[in-house]
Length: 371
Ligand code: MG
Image (cartoon, rainbow, N blue to C red; front, side, top):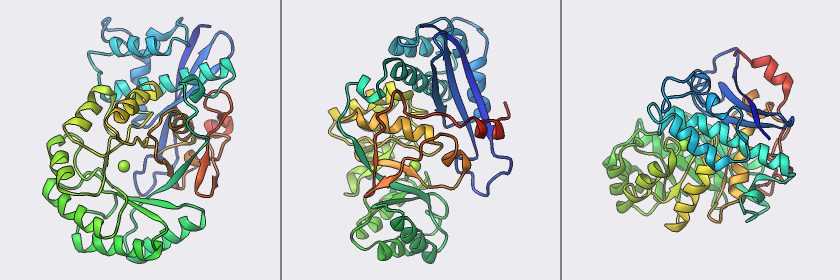
């Protein structure tokens, strides 16, 4: 089998949403082959930048768009092609957009491998650790205590047993922060887990103070209170408090995650399969976390493609804990693929169809495609 084309499809909703929430636009990667099998991937990043990384012509053997080094290759050599892409982009890459674009290709290559062999990706990764995973509802902070209570009630009605609030107003006023968390806890009672994602707004000392407040409401974890490069701040925080500290959605590659785990001493490792280096690299990162006895909970906040890819990773690693289940209302989240991943008792089944187990909705692609 040979790769015949690598397509980067840019989708945008016609109207800009009030909050930049990551489901405003999308870039889908399709890897085509001479045997008629097409692999699907996605990158949760700037579609314009990712498209350029895929399509750029060669400037130098170490500075090459990804498509040019993939054409004619055997798509089943997933690991070798990862290294080939990494080397071909090393001048402008190693982290950031280049590794993110590689992530979309890597997911598509695994989809091809699954479809070609008739197996779900997690079986090819030697997985099969589980057939379902507990999901947490992932949503944004509401502005008021009443809004928080309503959001908890709504998500509980949908069947969730855990909910994460992120970003928005959190971190601007410590008294208001506490009112919001208290309202969520009051509505949730003791049965539902509450998680908090701060959105990079604190320094080590304000994060420590906030972490102690969250501990008093038995919050499950405290996510990304600090900027992603503040490894020393993360270490200070992790040493000072008991609440687990989660991070990793801006991080990529084994090299970056080694710093986050060993210098930052975080407790929950969150590679995003569409940014950290794909399913291949996220599996390696999860293995590194397992070696340190840490759980790995893939970050996932965009379309159904990332949900499908994250579920395959989750099934293939021993240290998974949750599926992040974005409940944000966007047609790109809910209509792009043919699978809805319904909840049963707060859990989502791992698809066991070949590859990612999804098909793209061509009508939705036509509706929102801009490039
Ligand atoms: Mg987050």
